[in-house]
Length: 184
Image 1 (cartoon, rainbow, N blue to C red):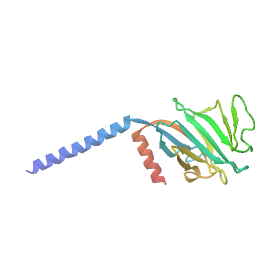
Image 2 (cartoon, one colour):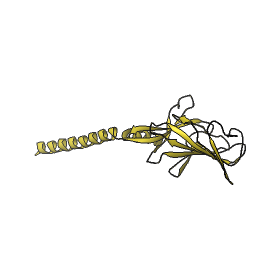
Image 3 (tube, helix red, strand yellow):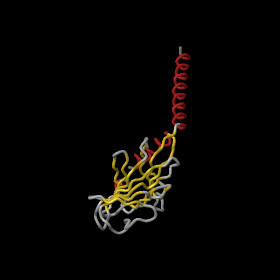
Image 4 (tube, rainbow, N blue to C red):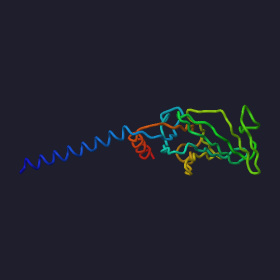
């Protein structure tokens, strides 16, 4: 009877380990598209992912911020392309100020509305969208699927981050989620 119990335990252990291995293999090979916000500042945290968001079928996201001079909102809308590059689609603001477009350049199109100005038809593509997180006023946020994440809440004001889209395994995604959770 003792040998039968040992044999049953070995069989159960083998079955459990086999199931774990199969799950690990499946999670390693199934890939998903993921937004990553990562640190660009030089130093120990360079390239550290501080936020990742599963990308669904929606290809657009916004970076919203408050202009430090005019104290007015600016919304930049970006599109994720099939090759994982990111194109700026439009910028919306309601007053002219430093470092905002002042007039049409290249082939941009300007629409003047009662409450805002829309600039679009850009020919600008990024591998990753650069953002310097405002220290005082800007309050930069990343908006995707109607969920707004304030960047100063996930990294230091004045810090430099990039937003990119990558294709990674579900296992890699889950491991990174655990790292981010433990760090916070």
